Length: 62
Image (cartoon, rainbow, N blue to C red):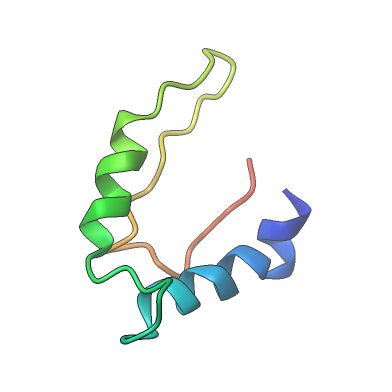
């Protein structure tokens, strides 16, 4: 959670989605959205995952 809060995850997301031509570049954020939709989480986690395409800057640690 601390990495999300400090912006480390935000930096990685910007590298992955905003660096065309690099080996780590992901051309479609919909690929990440599909993976987030397929994750199975424990019942104790009440929040659903937000999709990348519409909530790129609104990451929260919960």
